Image: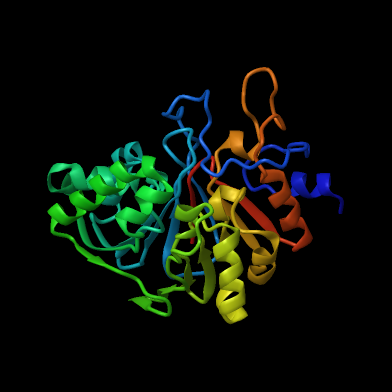
Length: 323
């Protein structure tokens, strides 16, 4: 099967797109310059039978046209575990959705200190009584504020506000450590695989992402946050390969300018989940240029997945539920 056939056949949601050259210069913080922040109405959620029981995994598309990551696990008994959540405006969607699914989050994992990942929780923490939902604990390991100020000064005010709101809320926060396993019962567990390495200065905040090996009803998933080349390389070098090999992989840094091919060769997923808006998937800067006009590296990652024999790719331009 050639590249074009693979890109046509592997998609779970979108129409086939031709493979175009995307250029070599990656933008590490991706945000489309010409798109409005709020999305138009999204299509109805789709359900994909995969786990064969156990917890359902709700994968939410962003309620903006920006990149984001927002995933909710719900047990048969109604227990909820969250991963990230997206931007502040995504919090307006999550509050009623969490209420609909039970109203209490047992544990809320935040992968790293970028607001397209922690912003929704930050907005909820700023609401009176967290918008009427209950949160048992928040698991996060952000670098020190002075480090953030040095490597990403524009991030500092937002991170500081988030931490202050978390402290004022009285919600317990826990610091995940490598090897720590969070067992939620009913077949779901999260294992922390790494910790921030402050010696990594390139793309430092993305590289501080905490990755988790998730087991759900015997299937394994890898949550990568926005981990980039340096941390991905360190994990491949230091972890037993059986910790990285997973059935389902969330694509690092929304599928471009994140972990490299050697990382994905270690993971060897059969299913890839792309927390990626349509314009980034298309490498499209908008205007008259269209698909292939941007500097993003999405197409390279698509080709890596072909080389690895990935069976299915799920693009989160709409909500999905894996059961």
